[in-house]
Length: 221
Ligand SMILES: CC(C)(COP(=O)(O)OP(=O)(O)OC[C@H]1O[C@@H](n2cnc3c(N)ncnc32)[C@H](O)[C@@H]1OP(=O)(O)O)[C@@H](O)C(=O)NCCC(=O)NCCS
Image (cartoon, rainbow, N blue to C red):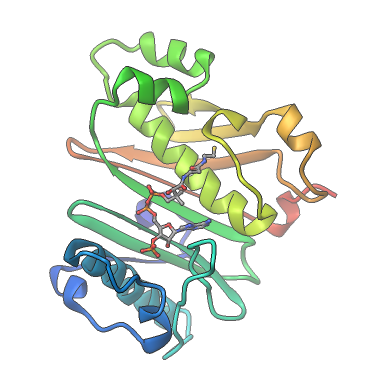
């Protein structure tokens, strides 16, 4: 994931032993007692990676609890993001002095069914994907990028953002995406809400990854 983010973001990708790592008590409180073993393992790997990334920024021994809205609560002066999918987990953390929010996402490269594609992609995005026959991963790239957008939007704006509230354009050669929030959604959002989100993506045979960040200077006056 560090290939998609600037060097001042500390990125940690989980190793096998991280899935059986240790949670701090404040972190364990964010995990339901009814959580199945696979959920425990991915949650644990995410927290272990998050604390290791924080350590690289000089922040040691602090927990990353869970907010009532299920987002990670980063230690004072830091921000970050966690993602996990089958066989892959990563955390990315940065100092708030460098960035307002960081978002990362990883998804298995699956062919999304038509009804799912339609709830994630706007008609013009579906048309763009349809122009690329044989490259069946583009809806998954849209999905992954839009999950990143939500992980950036949520800590900044704090409201719900639907998949169809953002229009994505993809620069295939540069492996970059840009998303514009639709005017109607922007109009009802508080001052400071970013109108545009930018990020990078990578498509591997089995995995689609996406990441982005927002600086304080990108927030609307
Ligand atoms: C929250 C959401 C983005 C997570 O994405 P996901 O692909 O399901 O799962 P990932 O493994 O990539 O990410 C899960 C992690 O996201 C983090 N997360 C959860 N809610 C979050 C929020 N509101 N803000 C930021 N991060 C959040 C958590 O760290 C979680 O892992 P954890 O529970 O182990 O701590 C997704 O479940 C969701 O609700 N999406 C709908 C909203 C959306 O994406 N809109 C698109 C706008 S264009």
